[in-house]
Length: 65
Image 1 (cartoon, helix red, strand yellow):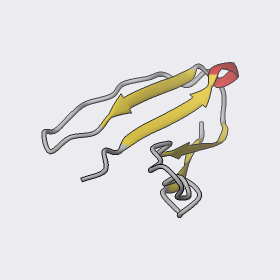
Image 2: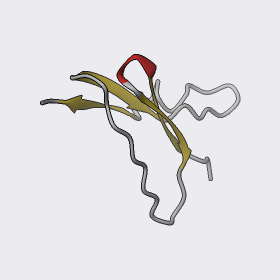
Image 3: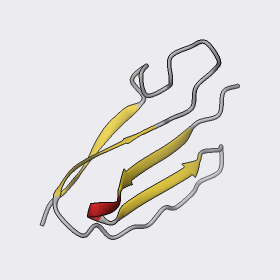
Image 4: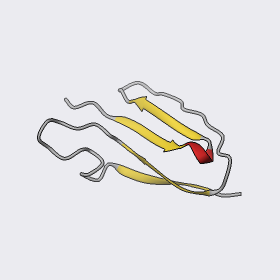
């Protein structure tokens, strides 16, 4: 089984998360500094294959006031 994680790397917005995922529930808290749309994704990759992000494991968090 290939592991998965979640990465959000937007330090200008105050959001920096890198957490490995498992079968257990995990709470991740952050407080954004500004509004906008910020990508999150899985950066795991098997040798000789596309990364999970390249295969579509990504999304957008939208921060609104």
